[in-house]
Amino acid sequence: MVSKKDVILTNDSLTRRNWNGDKKCCFCHFPENIQHLFIDCLYAKFLWRATHILFGISPPRNLDDLFNGWSKTGSKKYNSLLLATASALCWTVWLTINEVIFDKCRPKIFLQVFFRGTYWLRQWATLQWRDNIRDLLTLVGSQLETVVLQFFSSNGWLSTRRIGLF
Image (cartoon, rainbow, N blue to C red; front, side, top):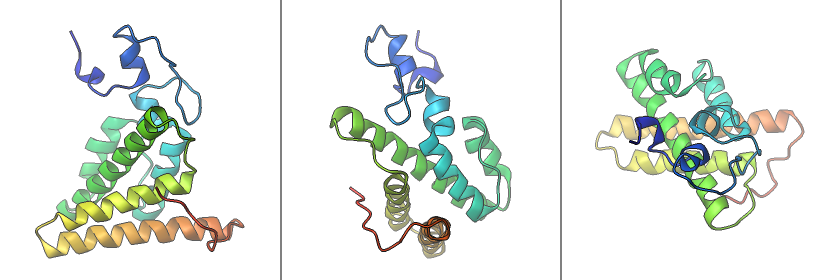
């Protein structure tokens, strides 16, 4: 019987289903499981650190902390923004890792993954029927990008360098 934890086909859940492929994360080569992929991998940590800086909340320790803990940190509108941001960033990690595995491309750099996440956040914003939520999600995406670009520029990265998003 497959448990709830096995519904996302990470390498560890595939192994329990007698899959014989590589069991390591294609980004950082640590054993891949859902905790690693969405919380502990260096790529995920980078995404959560930017979110931490913008929203002023602690990076998540696990998925329960991410989707349950973050949903109780403020007002209903604030929590909705946090959850939409977290969902967009998790979706980005999932899409990117599948692209590396199935399309046999090299892992993207942190900024490519990050900007792909803000792209998805903006795309999801267009699906909102309430103007205020749509505008807030778009604003969060822009502010996340600003936070990351400021961090990198303050540490010697030139923002004029091209970032290949897709």
